[in-house]
Length: 96
Image 1: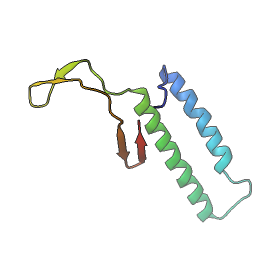
Image 2 (image 1 turned 180 degrees about the vertical axis):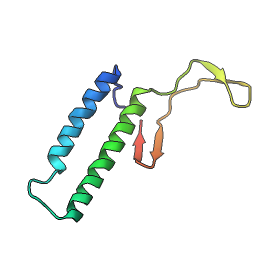
Image 3 (image 1 turned 90 degrees about the vertical axis):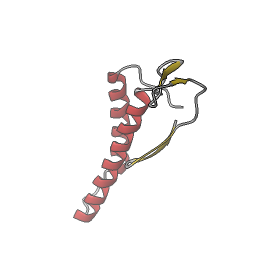
Image 4 (image 1 turned 90 degrees about the horizontal axis):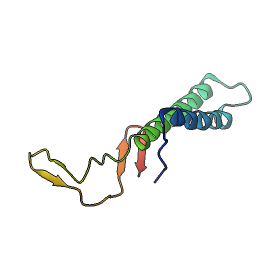
């Protein structure tokens, strides 16, 4: 499981480093056609959105609220254990 950032500022710094690396890798050195520009920017934008979403999910934690909590049905729900969490969104899939 990825280590959660300790603060919003740390999360932003981590993302900025990732974006710099991503842009260095994916921005072309030579001019290209409008089609290539659109393809590159779409790919970069998708990567950035996915990275921001993943970083936010890691930053906001597991959702653990204590040993017991109120269930949707009104009963008491008891914490059993942690399970690997699979998250699928429109931006991609993650395991945490």
